[in-house]
Length: 333
Image 1 (tube, rainbow, N blue to C red):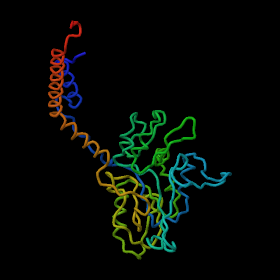
Image 2 (cartoon, rainbow, N blue to C red):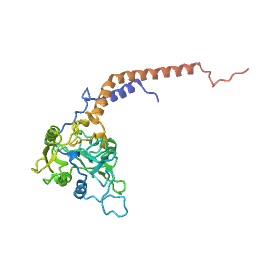
Image 3 (cartoon, helix red, strand yellow):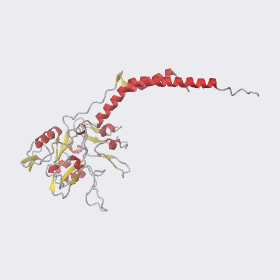
Image 4 (cartoon, rainbow, N blue to C red):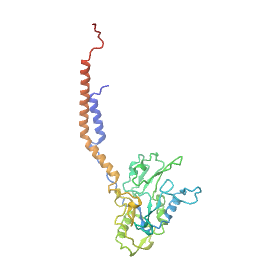
């Protein structure tokens, strides 16, 4: 069946329509901004003593079973984040490991959990909105009833946070939801509520950011007060200020996160990747926009080229048919 020129141009017009909206090229998606009432956590590695109280409290608050490689699961000993572990304390060691918060011959702790990105890739990747970002608190939550198990969120997350219940006959995606069920009742995240030193500190992101600026101005070795549990709790512990890295992880990475880190040891030592300031979602949207916008006129040219190629092909076939001998005739010698 031969394609008519009219049909081809109609198809090309349909393709152009997909790239435009109300006669205009679709604009790139706007970058998500931090909600004014966003809630989050400031984790200060220098205050962490590795007691794992936050991990135990998290499992209790979310009704999760202990995870261990032993035959008898009498205690919790997870190796990493999993479908049974929403947050975990890991340890960096170097050489003799004798000095806390020191790169050489030292050790330091890091807490891994969902960072609740300002512009989360997992939310954008989810085709059924099973993952959503609250417009007020900014917390990224999961709705098991909407999930179709595609696991696109796992692929999209740059921090490798969402986990899948492979061993469950009715599996779900599992990730930290900042104890949103406790916050709804006026509480705070369980990990922060039990932290004895204030290493995990809950509060409005704006106040936590202000607290990071205060800490960065502290003089190493001098004693200061550090809030415990919540930035607004009114409870304090006094510690000597460490020599912080001048960068707060999460304030700029990929558009920012609502869970931020402070440390005296470089973040790459903990396995935290270095990322650009712009979110992957924004970058992908910009690329898509540039391609779509730039493809409008090339599509028109492409339509013309295909039409001309088709026309030339038909002409060549007609010429071959005309020059070929008539197979229906017989010739006598």
